[in-house]
Length: 199
Image (cartoon, one colour):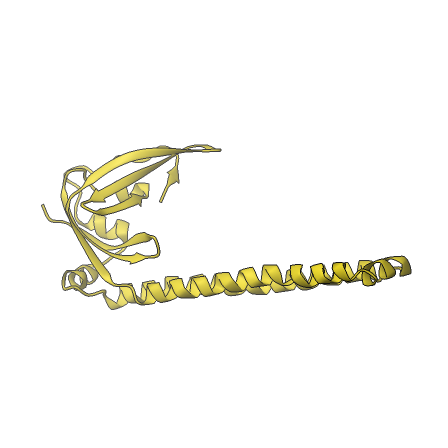
């Protein structure tokens, strides 16, 4: 995940383990469950909540789009029916009716398709599996260009595990240290559930 502006420096040697728990939002009980190969109940509830919000947004989008289409269609009909010449021009041309019948459902169908995509993603959150990466961390600051200027972000690599970090996450990690990362893969991106320094 990228952030704009200049980032903080990674953590120094003497920062406590508590910093990891606060930055990545997990508890000692969560960590213990993860080390036992389980996703804790609080983490499972969090994942379900994230999935539920996804479908909630898509439902709102469908309702908004349907209202928008109805208003636009009503305004169009009001214009067409406003005088006799426009009525004759419109209803006398069957191709215009065909185009209208095709165009109107398109935005609604797009939103319905988006709803089913987010519903699938919701199931991924609800049925997420615990994954583990352990090894020496490579923590590097990188940047990418955009129309608003450079975006700075931190890249964390531990073996095959790779993730972009927010500044506050990178600030509690140390390049070259050995970490155990417990995470869930939802969609294209990993979600860190807990992390501990092991060496």
